[in-house]
Length: 369
Figure (cartoon, rainbow, N blue to C red):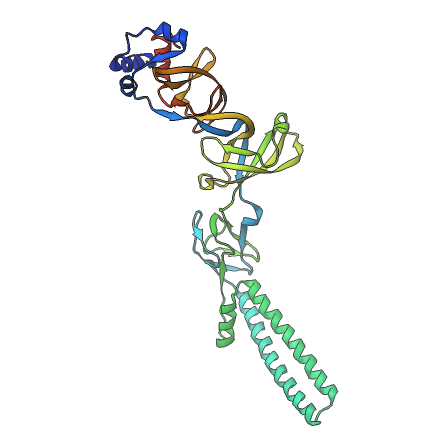
């Protein structure tokens, strides 16, 4: 079927009567500008490539530990409301859910009592300090009231911190100070700006202290955990790059493990995703290509620009008379083309598509694959 399509293209371009054998012998395809246009052949430059794909390995997309959080309830109670779901984007400090907690009432009551005791101790100390200056009370009496004042201040600070640990904000505590009104409703807030990866509770359920409610992650940075086959350990070093197959996602190796997994004989490598991280999903299993830096001049061309014949590969360099056929070595494949090397200056104009049509012209219809 492919040969029939090529024959029709060549016939439409008026090229079915040219002497093919002389071209194959001379590695020259004589084509006029009009014939090139009729065949729809596009001309482009060789693109320099700095990395060569060496081997592939399985990998998993993970979130850095510092960017992932389990949001838990600090007090036991009844889940009154869950505001967000899996996949939602949340801001730091945003209320994720509400818990009705009797224990929160106790903490608020203790705080108000401690604040009241602190006010009384402070007033007593100020009174005794004034009386001490007037000689009415002894220095010992002033020291005792000062000690009571410090103890009351510590208790009030402790009660305040317990409220903050329970989930009350600074503004919540100020409102409690101003109004003295207790509430059993505890707001569970997001510790970071990120995305909800998992919801672990539903409204109406009773939860214990420190029960997990959500798993949230900041996805601005992602890692790849790569299982490197032991036979390729000498091929890879820190700062090498890897490419996720079928994407344009690149990552940089930042850690190589020091032990071999006895089950699959691989070593764990960690790579930090540098480009297009939005194309990946947490937990996704992918295949990566290791890209090795090379001092040899290598180039990248679309696969449609490369023809194969009897195990060899060829590209077509533009010449005044048409195209010169040049043999190349394919070093590796990437999503947007193949990495090749050959006898090039780097300034050549080459055919970047329809290599199969040019190959048919070069070898003669029916003499190809």
